[in-house]
Length: 212
Image 1 (cartoon, rainbow, N blue to C red):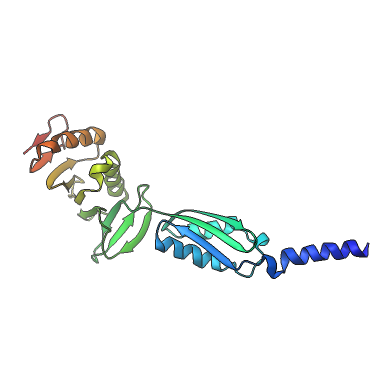
Image 2: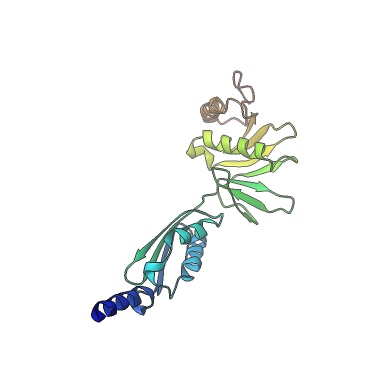
């Protein structure tokens, strides 16, 4: 009986307190250096804790609480490693603020972070007082969603006027998009009419598009 108790205590010690299973290394991988750093910081808080007692779900939740992170997966790498894989949110739109900075958004509308300048290929929304309201954000994201990927990265100077009408530059051509209505048709028209390399394309009334 004493031997059995001793065996149980030994197992408990190995699981709970032995340095043999204490987290000593965090292996973080991610699509950007920023999210890798987040994973390393949060994972590092588990160092010294028994690997078997690490609440991987809680670690994932803490990493994902950072708006720059889209998804995190945490698993145990026996005997002493915590393995973390992180996916960064990808900015597709930037909102210019009154301080000259831009707020980055992903395709779902999540606001990622505020930076001094938008990354290459991310269109910046400029315009009137409503540029940051939810309706404007949804409209801008819808424009980017319906455009083919080959054109999406070429969008520049996306603007709203006081009526909510959208315009932007695309491969040197000014696109007057108008409202967000019938966006799929407008995207097809823009793709077709761009082959003529006009100075501007008006698709605000998509039944009568006007290249000039």
